[in-house]
Amino acid sequence: MTANNVTEAEPPYRWVIVGISAIMLALGVGLISNGLSVFFKPLNIEFGWDRSTVSLIYFAGVMGLALGGIVMGSIADRVATRWISLFGGIVLGLCLIAAARASELWQLNLLFFVAGFLGAGSLFAPLVANVGNWFRTQVGLALGIVSAGQALGQGGVPYGAALLIGAVGWRGAFTTMGVITLVALIPLALLIRQPPKTAASETGAGDGPAEDDASPVPLSTNVVVAWLSMAVVLCCATMAMPLMHLVPLIQD
Image 1 (cartoon, rainbow, N blue to C red):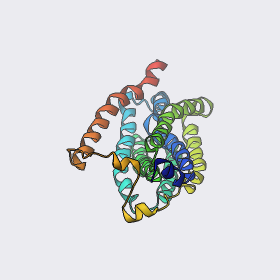
Image 2: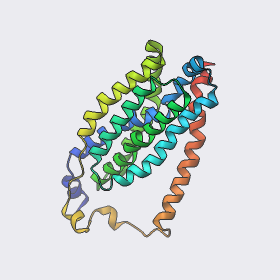
Image 3: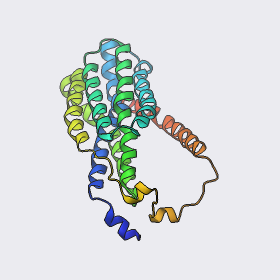
Image 4: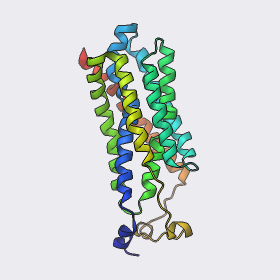
């Protein structure tokens, strides 16, 4: 089978899956990753919490996302991505609405942990894996577009949240963001489909061009995953801290 035949055999709906997944990750990951940065000042003014204290809310969210990605990614091997992402969108939206009514630090910590674990965690790994399974060619392009979606969300969500805070206050902003999340993610999740089975995938005889060029890696899969995980930890840790504190520093 030639590369052209492989491309023709792949359904056009795969690009719809890419677009939907990019939008869902923009909202979901953007809310957990950098969305809290514009809430530093309002929370400090209302509760008197310093920035290190507010940072604990962000820490709870990303720790939930990290752990949830592992758990929900594993569940995605057995449950359709549509239902996992639908569940994640609902949890994320409800947690944001509940955060608008929080009056204690532990409440926000708990809500953001749950939003990360069951909300964004149900979106990131399952959606990325599902996109990859839709493609036999142009996999890098598809995953690059999905990754660009979450990156766009990390910049766009804080900007939108700042406008909402200026208009309706931080509690109103959380409520509005929660409603937008529910209204946007629920119908998008229902459009998610599993990739169609092909004769090659059913027999295990994949004959795409990528397989012909494959060369053995002199490391076990577990070692490769461990090194990649460490690289992500070191990369994101050095970026996340200054990015989270950038908005309040500029406001100063």
